[in-house]
Length: 370
Image (cartoon, rainbow, N blue to C red; front, top):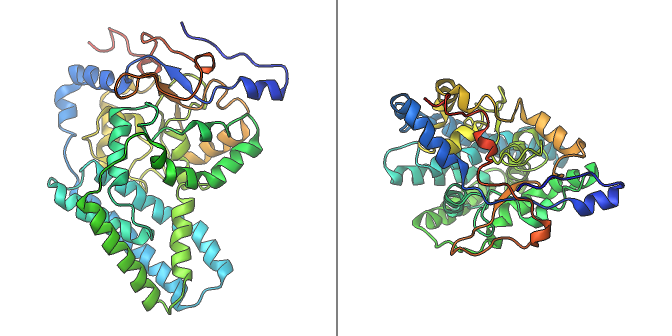
């Protein structure tokens, strides 16, 4: 039976009552959504599946622009003040594009042959300044196959991160400022260690070589690297382009819904429709440019779900709304690999949802799926 959160009389007791996460014993909902949608719209949805090799064009443009601007910062010896300004106003948008490209490529949705997807991933990694290798791809696959499982899913915040969402705007603002540190080091807190792949060797050869060449040809200046690293940092931090790190799985409405879409008309095209996140989880083999069509084909599966209009709104609400996280920041599942109980929280602190009450099935009735 589901428990409900009740507001406490003062801020201290309210903060103590907040569970880090919302715990559920329900199965992963996207597999069921996938099955029901295929039963009703199979032929139309199958037509959307496949690859989009044209994705290489915006990836190449982002690589060239980011490299050119970084080089110009060094060649023209831009002041440190302007390096930092450019590192916040421009670099995160291009870095965000390249990191979103990593997500798209990790699903092998650009080329049919995995080899060429890996080559493109290494190329997209170069202007980010730090080798990412295969870790994102490998851990991201677990995010889909074991969504919400403690110690396995890197897409869900750790309890350490969740405790910062305590109802005060100061704590949440501080979390977003340092969030990139949690984001990049979260895989090291997982209970599963991933093996190295050939992709890692490629990244560790190409990216340092790129960094050295950039340093040499831009006047032996470290400012170009600072520009790149600022973009990488704010690309998942306190910046409009990084609103997706909140909107994807954070329960800002405290409704138990595990995954959310954000239909930002300006930033979605730049991030390969990253905001169509429910749609992506429902069908991993549909490339980014066809996800809006999926929503049009099956509107009843999405119209009743909580979604957001843009990522700037998401960040503002997350920081200023004291009710965010009052019933848990994100949803985690009880089972872990091997059938053991997940999470460091005590049973008393966990909030449960019965398997029959799956918020992502909201609005879907036997009549609507016929």
